[in-house]
Image (cartoon, rainbow, N blue to C red; front, side, top):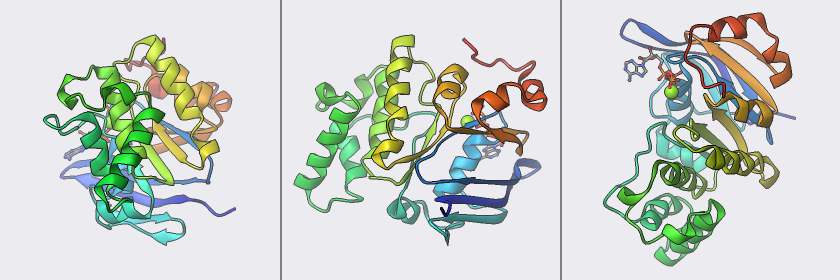
Length: 242
Ligand SMILES: Nc1ncnc2c1ncn2[C@@H]1O[C@H](COP(=O)(O)OP(=O)(O)OP(=O)(O)O)[C@@H](O)[C@H]1O
Ligand SMILES: [Mg+2]
């Protein structure tokens, strides 16, 4: 089976900070890959590179076998990569459904078509009761679901979730974990950055661990829980191990 995503020797620096340092990993279709690492490890930067928010300083990113590094984010979304933002960025003055429709227009040309896709996506994430509400009225938990809906309304093949559990109640974490776990069976491959380790460790099929921009380990959650470098990378970090 050929990889859906291949990150090959990718680096990105910001002035003196080497945020991503020669990172290489692959994601197979149908995987739920957990991407973990301490604060500042370079996880969000990796997502920004894959989604085309920024370009790599060097290295290659292949999606479905095609090099996409340096492409505009809109073109990367079109070939099937969607992402959520660590800090939700809805258009606060628009309603919840209007926010999702803006994503749906990537696939649906008509307003009616975009509305139908947005409605279906809102129902999917359990936000159907909030379609008419202003995005600014949502609680943190609902805002995270809106981020997920905005990504999924692009009908991605690969979705990048950046800390969609942060600020959620334990009940919300449980519901979101179950939802994410179900995505690969629906043909959506997932890379999931999360500090809520217990949720990701029980859900991910495989994990990649980064620290200071470098990949330091990869393996199954069980393998990594025993990996000395992984344990060391987390010592002294304020990780949510609840
Ligand atoms: N646009 C930018 N300009 C300058 N430095 C940046 C920029 N984006 C990220 N960095 C730096 O790159 C490093 C990696 O940051 P990144 O946000 O990717 O980490 P992270 O693993 O997502 O951390 P967290 O778990 O806290 O979200 C940090 O040192 C950060 O300050
Ligand atoms: Mg981050």
